[in-house]
Image (cartoon, rainbow, N blue to C red):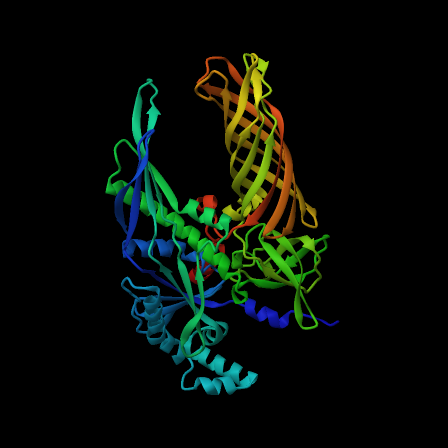
Length: 589
């Protein structure tokens, strides 16, 4: 068995040069929304459809605000503006590459036509400018040069153009362009008439309008081979048949507004615009995650020794948009085959901005979570959003009391579905390392009981809970956690001789403890015990005093990583701009 150092595999993790197009391709500038109207206590009927507009200028603005999620400071950036190309590296900004460049502009079109238009633009407007940097040398001659000749050639051309050697060499060999396209938006509008009770006791009817239109943005990755651009990868922000991904995408792609009257087109357009921004943000999160599944876009670093047990230094950090709790897989090359040995998480993000003097840069500190790792193994970032969908069973042993008498009812069994997200990673804030926020919806059944010799039959139950927990890694994939939830529970019971069911609503505080196990970075099992403490209770269709009493509850479940941030998309922080600010400050001095 022969073990080798990861020299060759590291080549794919070197800084890439990327150009991001600031024009969002649109298949259509309108989205048609079929309408369903449901009257209060009545039936639901189709009510035709409305259309909402997607202005090209609005779409481009949204794209510009979210493109840093795809093209962060981990890349050198090629930027086109009025009649010039600029190159932004980690340590400098070059603005004097004067070139007659026209802006890309495309009308609505099919995906195939848009891809063809973009390819033509890159090869007629951008590629010649890059190829001119090679001077009179033909690409074939360049490929035939030995290493010393190439080095001399690159340095001469770099001196002639004023461009750093490393940037010029990357532009010649590994430049990329990103284009984004939005297929026709499929959505729905649901109008539900509901009754609201005012503070003065009056009741009014209002309309709850819910719009759902998740975006399935596509990313086209073009690669420059030294002469022209060609399509290298095509990635789509779709759920890929995963139930949790589909739910997460639906959540970030839905919005609502309540109106006193039937909604106007301006009401719905306003909701759609807000929904478009959030759903597009979540689609770029998904695209960024999927992009890292391609090895040439995944950050990698040799593992360096540390003086702490199961702690290792990595030569990556804030420059590469690494966040606290970011997972890395550890690989070792054995007999010319790369073998995964284990995985870990970054607990301290290195301040490694290349604009800093070399002596001031610090590496990241990664803790081994599972498996094994040796010095000089290869650490490769794991595609991760910090969000998991989960499903679990919960048994709550609360009890229902009527006039102080325990009825024997009140316990409930729930099948829960929800999401949990790492706040440290999502907020890009080390203070919240291993702090997780959750939200879960449960549906189930209550237990039967008896009151005054009258049978209380079991019926349906529902629960919504949200909360947070702090996790404590225990080694080899295991962790313990302490947390608490606030929950709203609704229990229904049927009592003999009562035409209407007894409806009990309680507001509960649930402190809890949990033990979990990561089978891998994408899958974990968990179980826990909690104390379900009702803070207050209310009842409908019953004149007696009803109260919910506290009880122990147990839960067991499974969580799977999702490519979308879903309910956490709204709080997902953008990449750190520390390194860009340092570069800009240095260039001004």
